[in-house]
Length: 327
Image 1 (cartoon, rainbow, N blue to C red):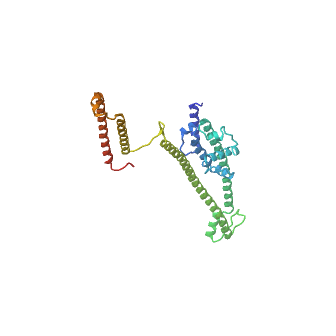
Image 2 (image 1 turned 90 degrees about the vertical axis):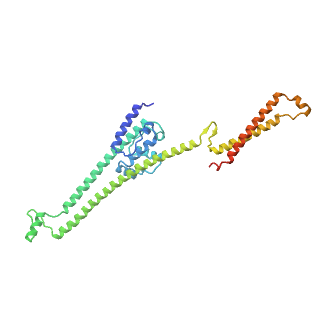
Image 3 (image 1 turned 180 degrees about the vertical axis):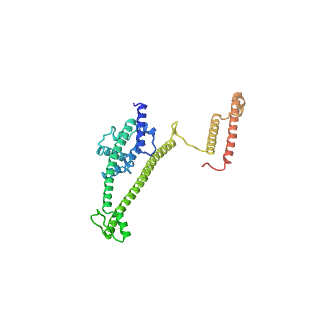
């Protein structure tokens, strides 16, 4: 069994990497320490789909789409990315990654994934910078070729009323050629402005997509928690106590039921008394055969029956006076 110190050290390392990639979602450190897959999947999803847009485009171009999938399909695609793109073999299988436990190994795999994505992001960023610098140099060359002539020459022409050729100017362009040059330079400037505007819009859309993905991850976690609460509620409703199902009834129904039980007990007692009392003997022998003990027993039974009848009648009156049944 892994010690708590090893897990805490891995968690600190993961926390540092999450700060590097600017992870904005909620981190369930308790679930990470227990190896809950629901705590690891949002971090992996953000790392592969939101942190590096160039890397995400590369995955989509390769047919490795990671958004809008179930946990099982997402894990399958994740292992394909690790195998085909990074040539990395995890220390856990897909089944082990989706199970509880293996917390330290899972945290180690997540840290390796973040490091691999960071390396890939830096490589793609350098390539984009080289392309951008080459594009800027091309635009500068186009501007220098189609730019305006020497400003000193234009001012001299305006003041003197004639066009003066500079000393080291190989040839003089006509005003029509200057106009054509300005018309040629104008589309280049417009293209640069449109490119910057498109890049600004793309960055804004990327930020919106990141916020939406983090919101989807939170909704997925909330949905799982709601399912667990609903399952717990259904289990609580179907509890069994002492082998019988727990039933809740109202007070009036319970009193009505008890009065009926008392009536049945009274009826049973009366029937038992009638069976126990023997038929009366002839009048001539009654006075001689009846003893004092039998008289006392009969008297006690009659008194108990009278008390039962009184209690039953009072319960019946209370039951009849009840206004409405229980809902």
